[in-house]
Length: 474
Image (cartoon, rainbow, N blue to C red):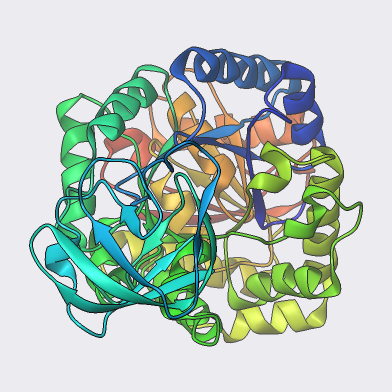
């Protein structure tokens, strides 16, 4: 199994129990539930099947609930079908919740016209169509078609560099969040984050519901890129969501922005998911393009923790083959001297405090004494995630009595979650219990050197103890 984790989106092509089992065996460690599609009744059954497969396999499978967010889309075209936008045509963009008709594009977003100024660009259908604003008022805007073509119902709307004053969490998101909490989802992703307060608001809602679920901020708007440092202060991870972000930034800008975002997240010990069109051609084709294979490998060299599959596994013709291909690309990249050199040269996390000092010491000690592994004892999973950001060249075994942490860590680079039972009476007893489990499961052998990192399981205040021992002498 590669250290880089594979997150696969479930959908009609893959959300039956047999497919979930096959995907997990092929290398998926986490599944994405896309709340933009799928009703709760179906998703409840999917979640139950994932948990059943997890129990049969004996290793954790994380669930990420992806909230749809305030995605702007065109209203339905009158009579179905599509309308044609001709280059040079003038069109009206209206905020009315009405049908789209020839020459009049309806977008059910009251704040849209007020956010537009003459000269602004409005993009439709993933940037395929472009309208330049000529004039705007509170209710509608008039524009000139720059790039034309057919426009059908429910197509995405993007404003490069623009800001629309709309809530980050919709009524649908509220219902989906309640469902996700009730069904024990392990991570929550928030779409179309614009600023820090969007993440803070989601975390507040989760806490009010009595849950503790880490949040992934999906970075898909230029405003979020500009505010990234502040967002990283409050989020548990980010998703480099290259679909809408690429439309709004432009494809020529996206590669540099992707690398900068990954580096920024690593500096703050935040989880990074790289997503969108990674193996897009394999939705229908049996093999990826050379560019796609290089894209996946380059994301690894940038330092991503997770690579994500979307339509390839949700609606594709051969989801398992796609996962096998992605796993092979990851494994081959990670075996290379280039990868290890890249990991060694990447900027290290610069977080301060006792826990981070202990984590740094544990990773450095593991390399210096040529340890077989780092054993992290954790109640929440946070310490293991932070250790993962240091990219040690030995396995990280995250030993935890908590099911939530056990599952959550299935998304962490290079971390193998190990579940223990009961509550140890002392640090020594905890260490003995953990080592015994690692010996029983052949993860360690007598005589191996292991670095122990602990603190949180016993007192809940983060790692504060590093210990080096030879197995058999504890």
